[in-house]
Length: 233
Length: 104
Image (cartoon, rainbow over all chains, first blue to last red; front, top):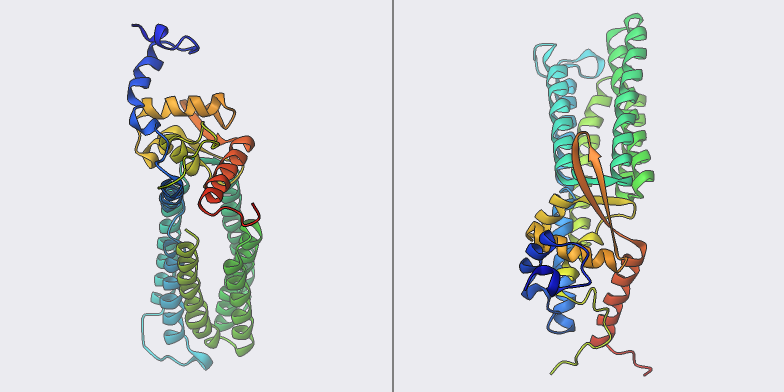
C-alpha cells in the first residue's frame, strides 16, 4: 500500500508518508481529565522555563555593578573630598565601566538565548527598548562631555552619575509601561527617589546611596521577579 | 473509575497536539516561534511535529508562515485566535469534567 492509497484526503505524498510513521502512540488522547490537565500544566511550565529567561540574570549583574562600582567611588571620592581607601584614582570608574559592560553582555546573551527564535511583537518591543537605552546614553554622554569640563571635579562627577542613574530609573519605568511589570515600575521609582536624595546630599553621599540602596534595590527586585516567575508557573 | 471524555475537541484531544498547543499558548499574542525551536522545546522529531502542525493548521488552530531570515528560510508557528479559543475551551471542558458545576 502506497502512502497515497492510505490517506486519499492527503494532498502531500512522500514527505507526508514518512512523517506519518513518526506519529504513533502520542496520537492517543490523554487517559483521563487529570492526565490532560497535568499534561497541559507540565508542558506550559516546561515551555515557559525555556522561553522566559531567569530574571536573576537580567537584574543581578547590574545590581552587583552598582554595588561594587559606586561603592569604590564612595570609598575613593567620599563626601567633602575625604578618601576612605587610597585607591588609584582611575580604579573606581574603570571597575564600574567594566562591570556595566559585563552586565550588558550577560543581559543580552541571556535575553537572546531565551527569546531567540521567537519573533514578532515581543522581539520588536525588546529591540526598540534596547535602542532607547543605547540612544539615551549616547545623547547623555555627548551632552555632558561638552559641559562638565567647566565644573569642579566633584560636581562634574555628581552630574555624570546622577544623570546616568536618573536615566536608568526613567528607562525602568518605561520598560514597566511596555510590559506592564509592576516590579520594574517600582524599581524605577525607587532608583529615581534614591538618586534625587543622593544629589541633595551631595557628592560622595550620592555614590554611597546608589551603591547600597540602588544596587541593593536591583538585587532585591531580581529576587522578587524570580519568586513571582516561579509562582506563576 | 473516571468518566470518558466524549465531547472534547478531537483535534486537541491527542497527547502530542495538546502538548503543541499548550506550548504555543505560552507565547504572547503577536509572537511566533521558529519550527526548530518549537521542535527542541517539545522534543519531537521534525516529521512528527510536521504531521501534528498540519492537522492543527487544517483545523484553523495554527498559522504556519514561511519566511526568510536573511538568506535562510524560516518556518514560523503561532496559535491562531481560533486555536487560542479552542485551547481555552478544551481546558475549561476538562476542568468541568473534573469538577462538574453544582447547578446541574
